[in-house]
Image (tube, rainbow over all chains, first blue to last red; front, side):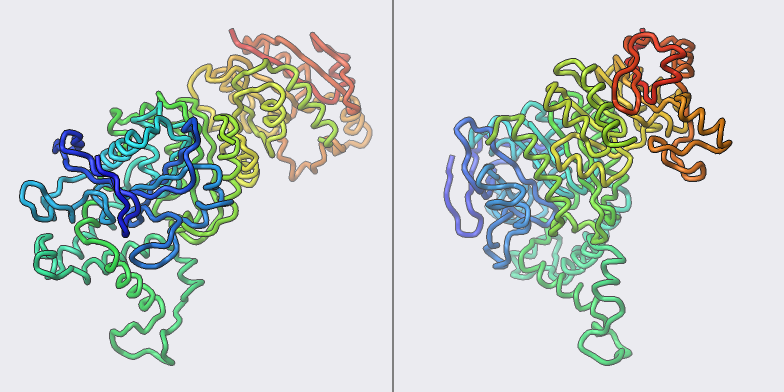
Length: 380
Length: 204
């Protein structure tokens, strides 16, 4: 196995052909590369490892400057020295998800069969496949048990999946702003994004790279749509209202008259620089396919029967994409197994993205939860 | 309830709980009882609290607490999931107290229930002499704003337990000074002189 430092992606492990990952769709994927970042030191008893699972368009750069955008890490408020996930105390790992575009094997990787990028020949991946890949890296790092696995949104789905299929490897779990299955409305929004990408004449059925183009417009529209779902009406009203962008009055045309339009266009344009359109198709599909209860004959509680983990569920009052009611379904299932569970709803009108923001109450809650768990696990 | 009475209530409850037990505290407020039980009895403790503010404060203290209404949320748990299910000074605020008790004794091997005794002599005197709904230091709400919709007396509770087939393993009644007045079988004297009562129940 090959471990190397790569400029753009931090650390990277390449698993050889004999270590193929058999995906839910039946394909044995190899070779498999996993790109990841770590922060802090693994202790001698290997009991202080925390796995952070990133969301749909996140990546492994949790707490360091992003190598492509130059922006600070996406969860720098949460992870770092003295932060709620204190890197002086814990060893934090974050991997780019399977199907991603930041170094882990995905549609932009080279297909060993053709020696060309997979593009749409890349097999469909599921949340469970992503988690199995993560477990492979932990095996490689010699970590049997995670002190904690946490993440928001798609990351939260991975957290639930971890507790379900590796119950003996999870000491504590923090699913944030997520759901045990992707709702019809959420699938609908994803489909709009995918159709926008596919409608872009530069998409070429996914084979845009060899033509030297990108379906940037389609991907930007996908991002704009998705971005609206991460915010909330009160928040948009507060930030932008009906304010005009750099003009005194409306233009009677289709320029970005309103600040909200200009803001969304900016979100779309900056996104295409750092994200691959095909990867976006695969990742959104993985979320759509997620329905943890269906793997257990429709009884979600059965997914957690073997888990001995301490759970802390976190939702946000203003999140309409993954509302508190979805988190309560998870709570019901955990209670049905009398699991050790805490559940907090944080008051916030900032929508789904709240989990990425500075939310002091969330930090207080997670500090308390992690402290108590560390005490129980004997982590100093 | 005054802070001192509350303290007494918690200490009496804590005494009844066995070391290392699995405990669910319903209406755990800021988590004081769970904290005491975790610290002194090394219990595997869970809490349920109606106010989200209370829940968040508990979790920040490192306690496993969820937001929930006991009238609905207890149904989620499997049978005999806990060694003790505790309801401290909240029974009288339930809309269906008997149903809550039944659920407690389904999901717990034992239930610990404490409540203010409405037959306490000062309460009786208040109603008898003034002809008004009692408002005391202990029961400080006016009739139109009280959350306490189902007051009972010690004798009422003993009768309910008998009719439902609950076994009273222990009973303690005490007055406003926090002195334990009565143990064992609580009768008319406890019903008259005790301000608070606490029962340890089981259902065979």
